[in-house]
Image 1 (cartoon, helix red, strand yellow):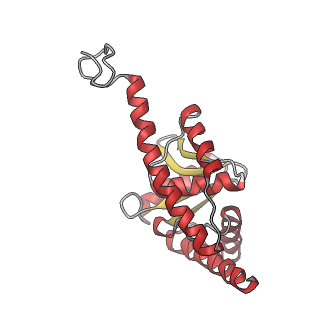
Image 2 (cartoon, one colour):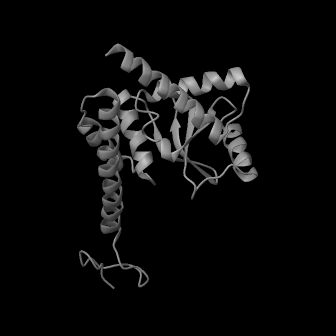
Image 3 (cartoon, rainbow, N blue to C red):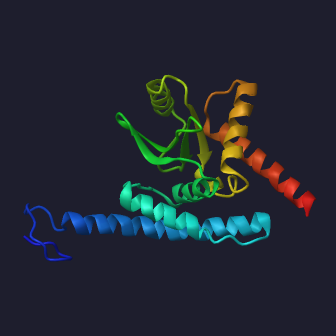
Length: 203
């Protein structure tokens, strides 16, 4: 049996694509998401700051990490977060594996896990709460777990990813609330609206 793309001989009759071609297909799927994310994030940036930003430097950094570190992204929204993290120089690991679980983002320097919750993949049920507790416990409870609704990405993060995260955590300490999709998302929106208001006032 040979690879259907390059013709290389395969070591299994159950395979149709060689390892090299399969990796190229994986990268291509991510690049399609990256292009969509760039367009989405550029529009959000222009809408808020009334100035264009091409995210070219960030695009190249992400491509390099896809190739060298095997970074993987499951959605366009995850790519948007990665672009903003690159722009702010925030260290991140996407789709970080912790035992049987995968978290959308680990920000090691911020000591934060970030979940981008879409209706298909995540829900606020008991199994999610248990999953979150087990993940945080695995890191000796020194990391915080926060969530944002996918429909608010990148609009609610465009004014500053780190500042947005800091605000959500500071408000959680004040209100004593645990991680919750709706509550965290409302805090992201609150911070974003405040920053946008201040930007309008400064013009």
